[in-house]
Image 1 (cartoon, rainbow, N blue to C red):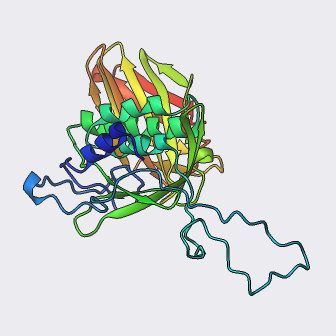
Image 2 (cartoon, rainbow, N blue to C red):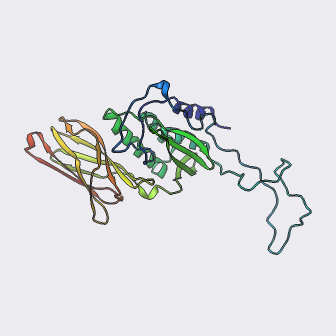
Image 3 (cartoon, rainbow, N blue to C red):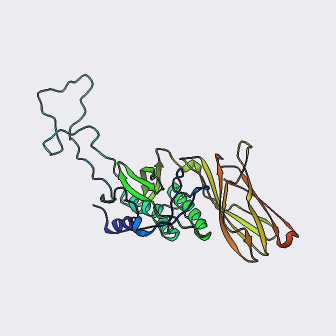
Length: 312
């Protein structure tokens, strides 16, 4: 049975209102997204709202061994059952989902509340795929939130082996399946996104930094989406003096040598002395493992900022 705390966490998702999320990314707002606010009383029906978000009950086994090669079962013998009195139908058994997965997914879906998302990090093992994945989206939604854009949370529906996360859209929700959850010592370590492992597309960013003319940048995370191949890089900039960052002019050089310009840049551009900003930079079709360059000018451009750091 699902834990009361898990049910409560997921139920909160169904009350959130705000702005639509993109049509293609797993949970990230898109660069061309037109954000509109809807009144709370016009909230569309929630997919699976009447279904509890919980681990499916495992189907009872048959208790019979597979016949040895060459051995034929007697057709006159009735099939063994799991105690229901009916033979088990193929496809009835469901993959077991860890209890922690529901609460983790509830945090991932809370795009309207980055702090609620951040709380979910305690459910994932440090330095695991699950931890880096959630931390990445915390950074992205925090950047949007700091820019004054609030997004409606996604909805969750239980599926065999996991959950379907659906982002509300003007015409129809866009959905992604999260399955095959793995755990260690009660913490989520990984999962599949639409059947693919996101681990090799993630960068944790620990220790990657660069400095120029009193401006420092620290790479936070990077992820090339499984669903649409858009690379999103999150970073934190701090400055000693007033600075104008050219975030839209950010250039990313992929491992194959191809150069990409930012399609979208979220974050503060004009920073006062001593200020900090977190940014999210979008590069369609770019693979992780390259180098990112960001330029800018100090006050009245008496010095040029030139920051370059690896995204790996």
